Image 1 (cartoon, rainbow, N blue to C red):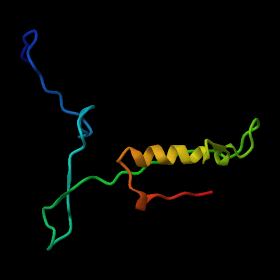
Image 2: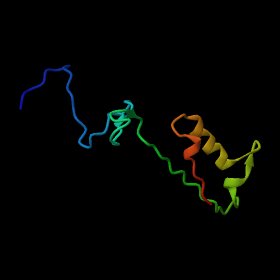
Image 3: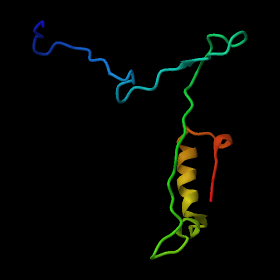
Image 4: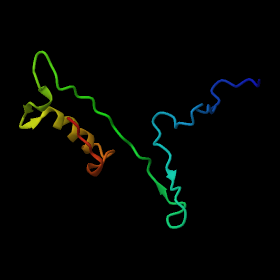
Length: 94
């Protein structure tokens, strides 16, 4: 194995092929044939927000209002305001 000089830049590949921290994810290629072939699109992202409704101290606390907005609404608003998630892909389950 070659020795590396002190201060020399080295490159270490990620074993799972994921981008390094701080780098934006690579764009995926559209796999459909014909129209749109080779068009780059951002990766599909999903978030799972775990919000248990039961509580010993405050029953149904996720739907209690704080400043006129349900507590779960603050979380959803923050996710949408981040610009990473889109409103048309939002799913809420009870």
